[in-house]
Image (tube, rainbow over all chains, first blue to last red; front, side):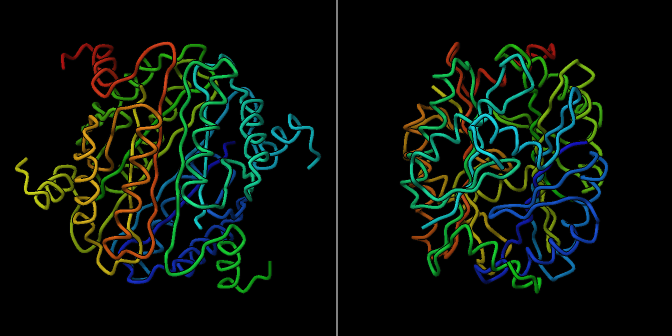
Length: 102
Length: 102
Length: 102
Length: 102
């Protein structure tokens, strides 16, 4: 199990408003059934490396289907083999060190 | 006003557990008074480009003060000049397109 | 055809020197036969999205085989559908606008 | 001394061709006198953290002066305190481990 962050950026679309494209990406992530969190700059997901890379391919492709001619897709995968990483667990560990309750 | 995403990674620390370092970074961001959101992979902040870059310098420096010998700090700044970006506004725009309430 | 940038970072390794791990990653990229360029911060490659993601999986996995317990792998894919992107072509286009010969 | 990677992306420009914007960024980096390398996906530079962040501000700003309404600027800073990192030194260390001469 790994945690990953995905950003899909349509380029050359003619308008600085990109949220309708981000919404298409979110629909695909939602439909995948994988746990996810939408953040102000990206989407964080949790799954095996195979599940993550399969989803990366789908979200990258989906913007071309919306008529975009150039797409920049970034994924950062964070995986530990001594302990399982989860979306909630990563935030919990930091808050615990800060003495904050979730 | 811009929105940015900051990640500070200590390298060569000898343990795969990094949350105590992330907690040091969060303390500095909290103390800055700037609006922020902790996500599973980074911290998102909101402010002027000058405020963002000043904070980047502080959080990058703080891990050396914790005894770390090598630090990789990434910041991604997203700025619009036709409309103000905010942490909440960016998420709201996407959820609106999805027909979700916040 | 797309161009991508890959960075593989071993975490918690006990020494700030990471080049021996980067060399393992480079060996796998070299063996893949895909065109690549080693830069001071990453490796840039050129291929189909499937070829890129297959290689991402291999290089991410290879550091665990070297005994690393946590690995952060980032890939940024840049793809255009109106025109083919290549490693050389991207640099050439910028230099041309600058009036520099390659 | 640190090594950093800068990417400046104009958003919503109406054409998928972005090299003329990248060329503006390169002009500013060249004029700064800081050592740099143009790669297929970014520009790598070498300098103090202050020099790097000053340059980040300038290149981010320059695309708004070209009429772009939204700009995404990413910088990744890699700094070691036990040893000085340089653009050439980072590549040399990897090639040495691979048994390649530069």
